[in-house]
Length: 202
Image (cartoon, rainbow, N blue to C red; front, top):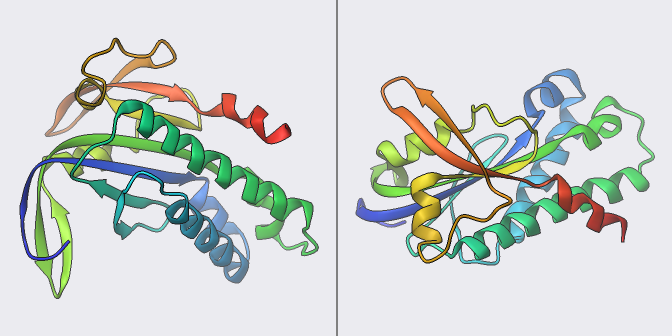
C-alpha cells in the first residue's frame, strides 16, 4: 500500500494460529517465539494467489487483495497454507531433540482462516499504511465466533456470494452466524479443514 486510498472492494484473509496465547505465556519464550515466527513466515511463503501482507498481528497475518480470487482459489489457498503449517509441525516434531515446553507442545497449535470482503480505506501513520473501515473490523471480530471446530475456513455469506456468484454454495460449507455489538448479525459459511489432515499420512 502506498498513499492513503479508498478501495471499493477488498478481500481480507486472516490465517490465525490457535492456542497462541497459552503457548507463548506458558512455555519458554525464546523457543516459542522462534516457532511462531517460522509458522508466520511459512504462511506468507505459501501464498499462491497474489495476496499482499497488510500486517502481522502476533498470532495471525492480515492478508488483503483488491482483485478477489474465486472461491475455489481461496479454498485452495487455505488448504495449501493448512497442509504446509501441519507438515512443518510434523517434521519439527519428528526431528525434535529439545525437551522444553515450547518444542514439546508445538503440535497442539491449530490454524483457522477468516475471509471477508467489502469497501475499505487506508490511513497513513508515520509511513505505515493501515486499513480502516467496517470491513476490516468485521473480519477481525469474526476471529471470535461459534464455529464448533478448531480448524476451518470461515467466509462471510456476502463474500461467498461475490466469489462464487454463478454457483450454489458448496455442500461442504455449513451455515452459521454471529451477532456483534455495533455491527449486528453477520451470516457466514464455514468449511472444516480437518479432512485434509489425512493427506499428510500419504
